[in-house]
Image 1 (cartoon, rainbow, N blue to C red):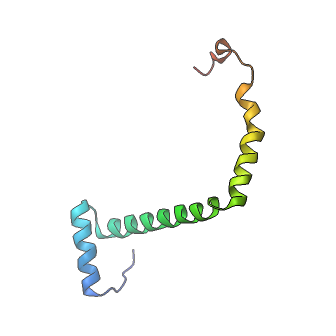
Image 2 (spheres, rainbow, N blue to C red):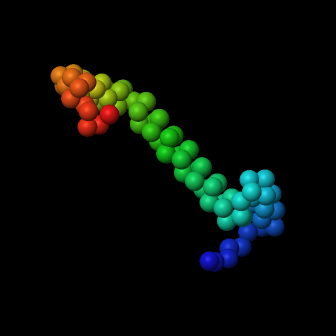
Image 3 (tube, rainbow, N blue to C red):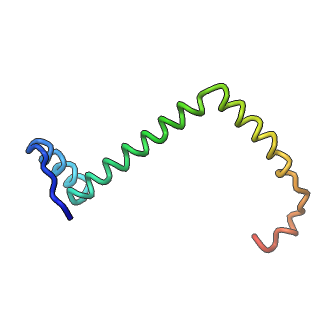
Amino acid sequence: MTTIKVPVELRDRIAKLAEQRHLTMAGAVERAIDVTEEEEFWARARAVMGTAAARSDLEHESERLAGSLGDELEPEDWSDIL
């Protein structure tokens, strides 16, 4: 454990959020960081996947893997995984 110094107003906001969410103050901070990191991940993913090059790469990869959808296995051959 460690202590960090934050302005009183921020401490009060964290405490209020923690109480509303039935979390500790540390839990509220951790959850806020988790949410921020996830939002940033998806923003980067949207930025990258929104390019023409990325869409083209996905299309080529989908075409390359499409053959595996018709692997000619009959349903009775799946008994070990059903």
